[in-house]
Image (cartoon, rainbow, N blue to C red; front, side, top):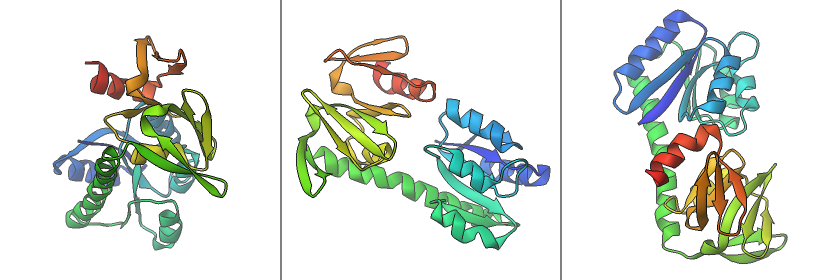
Length: 232
């Protein structure tokens, strides 16, 4: 099920999207917002897969809202103006719906979302057949055993791969590792942390304790999915 929200300040446009979402199998509308700032606060605490986002919004624009999100969900822009299309695709939006749009055009956008959702699964299957990966370190490539990675921490535009005895710093965002590493073994539990679930020693409150004693916080946004996947 694709969990989505609407960020749109015009009631007729809200109602149209709500009807289209309700009529489409595989979509679950979690909330509708007129204010992009309210939507940002919601996204920080709830797991959302897709945003239907208007460009012209009160206080800040849809484009500005996207730039304020550390790891935005997939986005379908909805607007009456063509001039924002280039900037939209530079921000990696899935599609650009020009108002007024039909239900068939809406469905075409959803197919693009579903297609993107399938891509990490392919990478996962390929990676699960390997027990190592190569990461770039300057001009060199280091071989890293996947089972040796305890956890991964975001460090701005870089990430640190923490192993039993050392760490490797690489110029990849944490989102790269969500797609690259096997999802039955690695899980993102915080906006800044992914863990190797094979190295979990104990879970207490909102903290995961790993086999080497490191304590990793569980983010509120990720807690329900983590518990549902591994602890139930």
